[in-house]
Length: 124
Image (cartoon, rainbow, N blue to C red; front, top):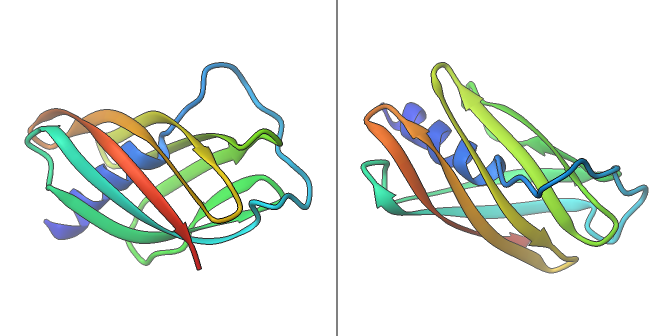
């Protein structure tokens, strides 16, 4: 149950999609590991989740142990586009990532319907 809730929240955060396709940045100042706090503000998803993601050459990857599919890119401008899925749950959103951290909003579907909120990232 906890994995499913985290997966949904992570999906919602990591699906932080910026409009349009972006090319991955190469050896960017955003490369590194980030702690990501996903906060639910609307809907019946869990209230908050914390986990790690890694950015390498503009590509976003999940660093946790849960069965979550995460894919995304960070543009040279810092615009981040991420998607997260686990079974029938998933999320999307928008955001910006800088060398020290980032923030954005997300929207997705959990086990009990639609949810939305915001995310905050802090670099390790």
